[in-house]
Image (tube, rainbow, N blue to C red; front, side, top):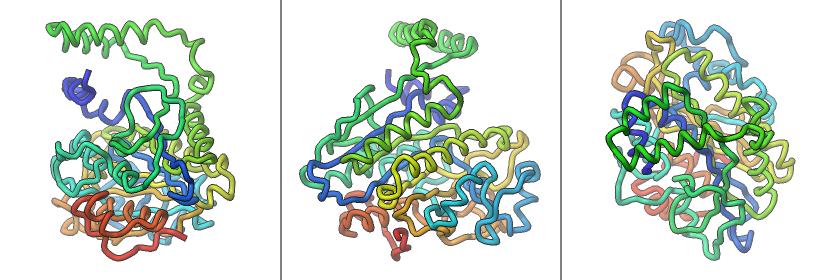
Length: 397
């Protein structure tokens, strides 16, 4: 079944499911000669579901924030700049912040505007195009187009379990995929929904039935222990495998973290995704060791931000301007980067969203230029078509 068609068909739950892919694939790239990409490691993490950048890095110094979000600020996190504070679930990252190995970009987005669809937003984010709608002619991701410019590239051996690469690395440049073992649990309500939707379609009814039968027949004792010992165990396994490859010849790793679609009860709902993100950063730092971590840049990005004001369900809805998280020993961190637009209603995009003041692609492009020396014209025309990178923000240490 085509994933996009299948998920869009689940009309009532498509938004939620789009933010929670059925699988998480780690995609790797290396080169036959490590010198072709140098010693730097790049880790790109796609935060699927539209992470709320205003909750990740809160502009607590703005008196308007409490009025917009009366229930979302009950617990205060550590101070970052005297104006911005960090979400309390990420307190464990403060030592990296103080060491200059953690930073953030605020009020940034892709060129995507107004429709606020997870599907389209993620397509544009990973394709890296300059259009505000997905371009059907672009079938490769921006990381793959970058790798196409590297001679002598080969797919790094990486336990290729699964069939789909991460879209950001999809394309003709060779990469390898690895997926942790997965058990997909469907509730009784979800199974009834599948039966109802595909009852009159023989092809999809059979496929859906087969998927449900598979999940019911899986024996929990056959699953890897790392996936059954707590909410962060699967993340540990994924991160450890990424670190193992990055300690060897791999130079590029990409995977996604889901769960960021916080329409309801955001205070509770965003905590676990943030803990997962914190765990990835801290565990990579630990597993890579000082030498490799010192040459690593992690870039975490999302398809768009969320509304400035909370909604009636104590959550936030799809917005525009968002935030990026950057980490690694290669980073010149300890900063909240980007031009801050403020929270005055007149300064908001459509008087509802954080106004984007930079293009998320520009930050990625400067990272690629600084780490791997790519020509600026290549980045602005081939890797990120239509991009104007602007002035160098000095991301790297």
